[in-house]
Length: 261
Image (cartoon, rainbow, N blue to C red; front, top):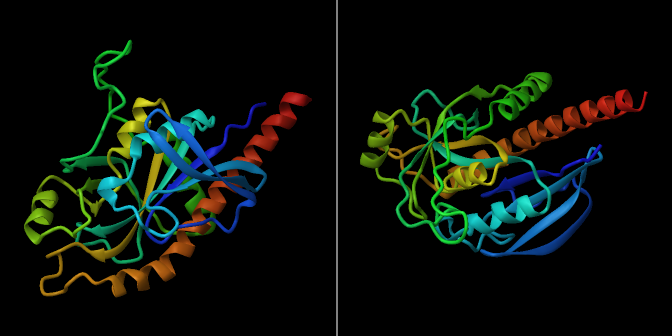
């Protein structure tokens, strides 16, 4: 039984994975540029980890090479990708520290390379369906893992992606709210659409670290506030990821034993 590595992509506040055994850093060259990845095992399962902004958070969201990241993961044999995003809450019912398992997106970016299919080469023009850009099966695995450890997770939400690196204006958040947005972030798109184009199963969990601009009038967004929520929220996200991988490792072990019997 071939074990395809799980791809994990994370951003602000998630710059390494201490849980990885035999971790090794390497560069992967693609047609879209080079990507630094960390490879290792977690509960005996192969994992490829990418931190979007680099280990020192030196790459702003609008300059992340999303095409290279997704291409590198696919080239390394990844079939499933778990993304972790840090976001502001558009939905006023979302509290800082809550986790949302995303099921849709709204792209409000303006200056990003958002496709592998630019009309050149043998592939020509390709129109990829985005109805289930967030894979329902992988989402179910995440939600089941959350239930197993008693971690509350909001089932479903729309990720609204802005270019950044500035925070959004109150008017932009009001517009996003009218369109059904749940959380606001700067990295979820085109990552999710590129994964769909590459044929990867992709799911995302969003850690809400602050109310988005104007949701609570008079309250400015501060990095101190975000860092404080990250300090308590990041371990909850990592515990969820740990349980997801543990569950997958048990399932694969059982499947292998059944095949051998």
